[in-house]
Image 1 (cartoon, chains in turn red, purple):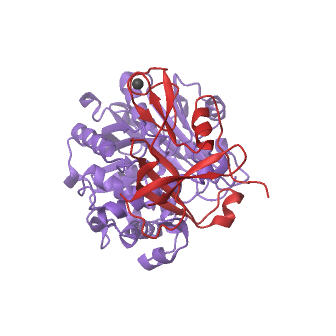
Image 2 (spheres, chains in turn green, orange; image 1 turned 90 degrees about the vertical axis):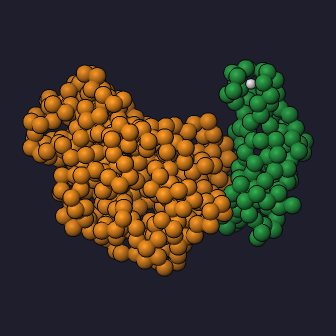
Image 3 (cartoon, chains in turn yellow, cyan; image 1 turned 135 degrees about the horizontal axis):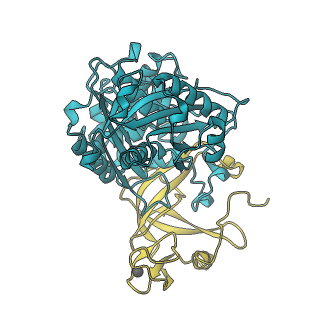
Length: 133
Length: 373
Ligand SMILES: [Zn+2]
């Protein structure tokens, strides 16, 4: 069966992130001028306005900052997953990401340690998700 | 900013009925609200030389429908945070002499056109994870509040219960059946921890406000309501997670509130009623904390026991708010502030109402303080 959930809209600014994810690496955008790190990517550094940006691999470790359980599917592709859990993760390197919390998470609490796992949902796209550690 | 204290006043307000009107578009709804506001103050509509439109497709068509060629126009996007911006900008434009009389128009046809506020209608960077809709963002914020401060969903229920109580006192409100804390707890989850009764309505309707300068405001049917203070603060730097703030917009609401209190020269004890943007019930808790009605993290215990109900410590959203009156994205709450200060609210009237505050805790946070003219 074909994958019927939304896929990322890949563009020149975020291409590196999805290339890295496909290779099993979690990355954030890094400003070569001032070292500011962020996700999602920006065409210029919001701190110093430099255009000189790169993708750097991060540890994939972070802390759980919050979560929400969807009991409604806004896309048909999620109907079979209800309820599914979306998490907010603060990476050890600073940036904050939204993703899915997969695997057992009954002991979820703010500040809990999480780590990235990769879900190759199509031939081209791998989604970085998180699990409790 | 101090020179803008009481510089502008609301002289007329009007709205349509609220409901499901598939046969009428934004222009038709807005025109009806405009006619009601014109009749409310008795202005010659051709005197109106300023126009603010929000969630209306084309400002010039609106002018055509109303027969107006204003000197000054402002168009606002259809986001639930533009009412405070529009009213403050109109007051400022009046004080600057850009125009003499401003009509502010808002219309929403989201109910009859089945707007969902999520999924492909509002694409975002987190869609691949199924994270969509403003409600989910507020659920994530409230989950965090529960975790950090021990706030409970029964405490959250106090918000929906009090506001529904007010809707039941307002014959024009969409929802007319009282709810209890247990009803809230038994409602179905949409995005847990939020349930159906934590979500605002989606309905059609329109609102109009007519503003002028303080000196001109004395010439109309009813006593003017003064715009005595206002403040604002945006939170844009982490807006890729839309409708979410890691700190519950606390710094922004605090700042906007302090600006408004300082300009109006009033404090918390002077506020007779609070009109609080209630897109989702947690926003009310975050607003109470940001404004300083209670300390950060203590809104859960603050609202326990019906604090927000008419007759108790701080009546909030006496018209029934977005949760139970009408989803007019802040505009109807500002109209309610005016009606309370005029003493027009019947069974839901706040006794001796002299000062009413409006607040919207959103990525564009605004607060406005209205007083009797
Ligand atoms: Zn930089």
